[in-house]
Amino acid sequence: MQEEKNKRVIREFTQVFKNEHNVDGVAHLFDTKNFTHHFRASVAPGFEGLKQIGRMMNGAFPDVVVTEEDLIGFGDRVVERSSATATHKGSMMGEKPTNQRLPGVRSTSTAFRMEKSKNIGRRSV
Image (cartoon, rainbow, N blue to C red; front, side, top):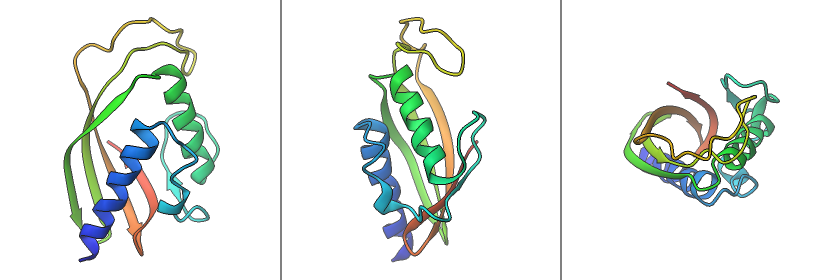
């Protein structure tokens, strides 16, 4: 079933990119030529911008641990609701490190657009 394949792609992305902090280890999961994102930070377009965000996050929160709470696949979409714990140890978008553990657990939802089991777009809500 295509939806299960798509969900496996997003699970691998979360594990490798977010938890192993390997921003260069996920290119095989993306259509790197056609990938789009909608980040609030000023980064390059496409897949290169995603890697820039990953490096920025890993520098600011080197001990981040992301946990999948829900993963729902339907058609060409996968929605992930995840939580994260981390310590703010590096600067990010002008904010100096506080060396404080983020209070509580941070929760985000991200919608991924898939084509032939490749990630072609993401938007966090």
